[in-house]
Image (cartoon, rainbow, N blue to C red; front, side):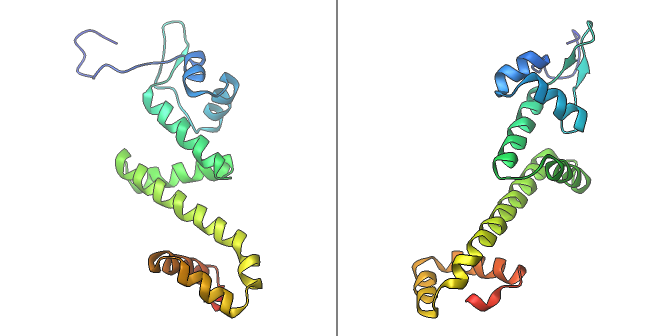
Length: 152
């Protein structure tokens, strides 16, 4: 950091440090960087790539999305589309979270479809009475989006 700079001080990490803190390998960080999922904020005097705390947050989001079965290409497109929507990181993060939750719900409903289709009408009615009206409305809306509204 330059002395007298108006920038707030921030932590900068070389790949090894970033890997240790984030719990992923340096090779994975290189791969994500090559894909355009991560980008160093600057280079050191020794030409090392330096990453900041925002990169740690981004790695955590990538790993969460991977845990939800999104491919790296899908994750890259999500990040790209959010960057086109709003440059404000906080709004982008909220939109990403909402989009991730909706995508996860859609995937879970698709996984439940075969089970729900095998329910007898009385079983389905009992099931939907047991969940909250908001949850039932959400499931019904997702089923409608998927073109499977005849279950309710």
